[in-house]
Length: 111
Image (cartoon, rainbow, N blue to C red):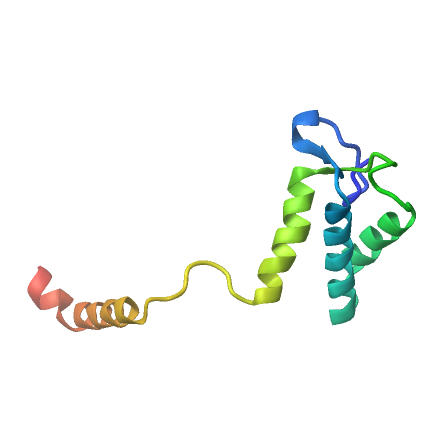
């Protein structure tokens, strides 16, 4: 059973075991941060599953790689508030100018 989604693990290539206490701590930290910021159902469920075991390594706890990436990395992106590449203001201004020029001059100069 996946520690994060509680579904069957299935394909071994897409699953990992919790191998270090650092992994266990990282998961708990993400749960706690999410719970501090407000009610997060997924974090509540994950926290309950983690806390049900004293030692995830000894319990051979496993998770889907997809679930781990979605849970941990998505939470990091969401927490930072920024996604994607930073905007280049010069290029953005040039693009806006080009669009404005095309609106004004497209009919007479392009046809």
